Image 1 (cartoon, rainbow, N blue to C red):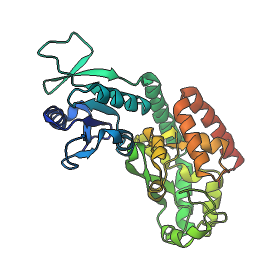
Image 2 (image 1 turned 30 degrees about the vertical axis):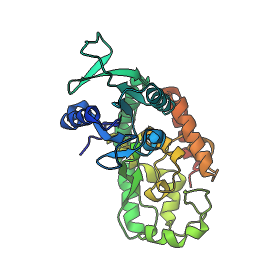
Image 3 (image 1 turned 180 degrees about the vertical axis):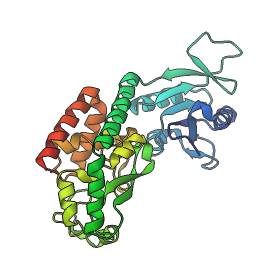
Image 4 (image 1 turned 90 degrees about the vertical axis):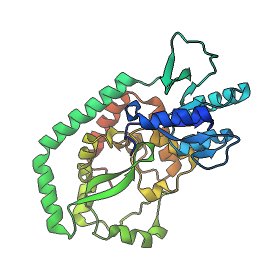
Length: 324
């Protein structure tokens, strides 16, 4: 089973060199790489060959690729085409060149005796991302400790006021499309998921989102918990596990994810959050595209300062009881 933090690698060229690179990566999990498949213009679509080189954008998005390794026979047009497509998708690109027995002097990597040179490398804010994770862990631990009595009280009230489990664990889509169990205090009747399909015709949101006013599945206590976002406190545990962050695009249910178009997959490049830009700017906007646009803005504009501003606005919205 691949590591959760492994980088997804797409190899262009399923010949001898490409297969050797793939086999080496598979045999060395310490490299933190997973080969998701090959692109090849001549090989049949089997044995890991996912498509042709012209399909790189589609395959890269649907397979959540981080890095492209060019191991195809040398062709200037092909190399430039792959490089340009990968740059637009913000992917790292490496190439296995024919060095004619010569040795390089730097900027290379050895993979199974094959030299890879870097053609393009995305610059990630490594320090900022480490600080973001540190903030997540610090705030989650402190909040869980300080709010422990309130969490116990809410759990007792949920148990006393309606039948069913205290916590509602639902599958959500996380970074790179990986599903995880997202925790909330249960605010609906126990068979809410079964009733959802019978209420689908009343959906008031555009696109895959599902939302209706005065949802009959919500309990009286659940309405109060939702108003002050208290139902989402258990997601601090998801933050500690690294499945979520304090701030990021909200994780969507699996049935919403199934309605994504190819361009929507970009929001899964980052870890989902308890709160996000959409929640503090356009929460009442039912447009699926508006939510996607704000998520994309957040990803492209991300900084720790932006996270702090979103958290500050979220705190104000919670105290005002503006949740639904």
